[in-house]
Image (cartoon, rainbow over all chains, first blue to last red):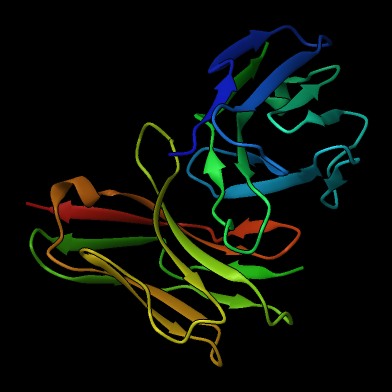
Length: 117
Length: 112
């Protein structure tokens, strides 16, 4: 099966610092990766879509300069939360999919719980 | 942007019984894909079932089946012979060529 590894699983950082979350596809090439934010007992809110080698497409209301997304290779995408604030505390989930009409399933990482203190 | 609506925040079913979770979506595209994902307390997203919009036949995976009504933009999930392990949050998802969006979710409780 297709495995997506997200790291770290949880992180605590101080206000004003930056934190990087990695999303790796371990056994397939991920041409598209999605980044979501999930508040407690709520749905997954799409933050951005990234395609390998291209700039990420951000959803309306998501600050590009605050949530930096890089998808430099077919197996790795990163989300960097810059100058983190307590309101950025949340659960962040990535998913990855292959190219092609037959490869529409998105495989999910385990998620990262970010706490900003 | 496309929207996905799950109108049932919570559902409950007796073990071994059948339950149906509803989902509607709004899109102007003709080529898209629909999914049901399960999220247990671990928060790991698990694919339950998938439906291609260009296929008329409803998808089935063991005890899970869908009722896909393209004209009505409806995509419900039926769980037969419910088991205790089915208890989780269930999310309906819409996938286009450029994004993937989720409904608000339905929390399913299975009573022994």
